[in-house]
Image (tube, rainbow, N blue to C red; front, side):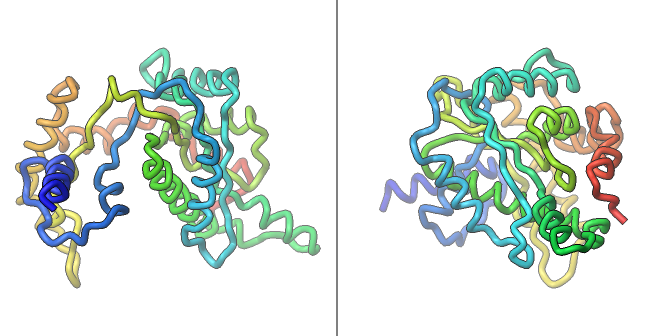
Length: 282
């Protein structure tokens, strides 16, 4: 019991730093895995264990799905040359010459919001998928894909694997779509690198704001989060220092993400790419 309490204390310290922490969590093995989550960007070269990918996909298929339409797919990239080509293409959109965690990970998963099956079934019945022209169809497929991918990530971590989500796939979404033969009525939501973490270069969990910033009861509180910013900035600063990252506050990062077009790294034209793939977003 003492060891378990120490483990829970460590998990909360890593997740929240020196801030207020929730005191009444219901602990179980799944919650422990969730609180231990961290983005892994250093991988060993060995392949995924036998059955790991199938387990991840089974977990993904067990996620909730809007109206049971199953509007997502995942492309697994294990071919070294293709993975390198994807990495090089994305690297040209950001201020770096390579993205090591894509290159190192034995498996790259490309998560696809996929309306193509629904469109094909509809057309085979002599009709046009007119509902796919509307924003809600885009949103439903995106939500389906995100829920599936998060289930897969949790399954991977339960097997001792590490993952990192890759929003940068959208930086070069059209080019990568051509590499892998993505059909119309589909679009990349994100990628995911997965593999065995290199423990000699391991990272630590990134701290989150206290629950009082995110959790609202009965009515949204637009001002309450401000009182908690100083404590979160302390935790954020300590994390960056511990990881030898350049000094920057969390609010600086928020400001940059909202004001710098360079932050978008090619995603400013994402709407044009999506509509070109047959989704008009009406």
